[in-house]
Image (tube, rainbow, N blue to C red):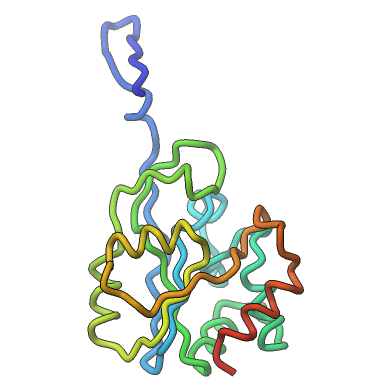
Length: 185
């Protein structure tokens, strides 16, 4: 529900008009040999609200366990963006997010607080149609549900355990074991 505010100069505006539109800072990374895509929603606000370093990349928030999981799966340190991209190239893994532009309705990183302004559907459609993608892995049930609304004919998707620390029903070790079973060797 919009809350109307009136300034003393008789100028009206709405609280929702003050919400900042955030743009995704990273392009999808789909190596030529990609047969798998790992798909998320949108970076955390601590990534979108700062000047990025050359090593900032997908799942770069300090609390997110994604790169700890991937490091555990492949038993290697992933300290830089280049390390991560090289590993994904070697194993034919792409990474992308569903949303290009959002507004946050809450002051946190939960997907339920994202109001989508623009989907990443055009790029994802081109990748799915023109690459040899065999599996799309979703980083949450929310991603899976949203993706299947956009691409209902996709029959090769599967949900991974969420790398979010909020998904505490599974330990980091259990998440690594689960990803290890599903990701390429």
